[in-house]
Amino acid sequence: MEIIRVNNTKDKDAWLLFEKTYNEIENKEFFAFDKEYTPPKDGFTYKIFDNDKLVACFLLTFPHLDEENLGYDIGLCEKYLLKVAHMDSVAVDSSYRGRGYQNILMKKAEEDAIKLGYKYLMCTIHPDNIYSMQNALKLGYKNILTKEKYGGKIRAIMLKEVASFS
Image: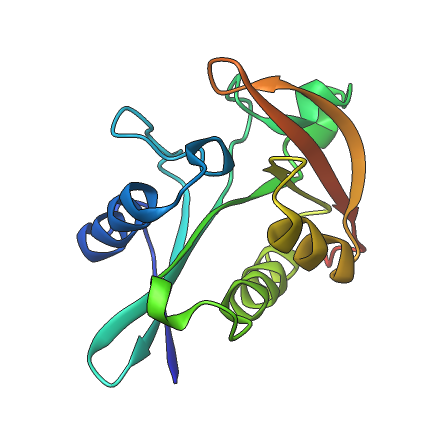
């Protein structure tokens, strides 16, 4: 297993895996991906390969003061909005699910966000997506609020507050 970090959020191979994952999952409400979704420009794509095959990918994004910053949903002031990092999206090839890749990628993204000085690690999860919810809870995220996001999709807004280095 090899993890590679790409210094952008629009990696073509990762987007193809996101699209494949979306097309294959039974409950489309669990996955916020759609062709219209555009992640913030600032962030990283993490990819796991098995030999030469891309089997999992993850987006870490830095929304800054963009209206999509989840910090607005929980009432953070502007000063703290700049310290929010989004554990944005994950896709795992269907034949590789159940191997802990979401957890591995999320931990790597958290490490990088903390090194960069981010204090509020946030994500959204459909409340019935028990696998993603369990992964986030195991990593120390708390369900702060449940509300409609992304054009009417219900989401738990998850927060992990960490000590940062800056």
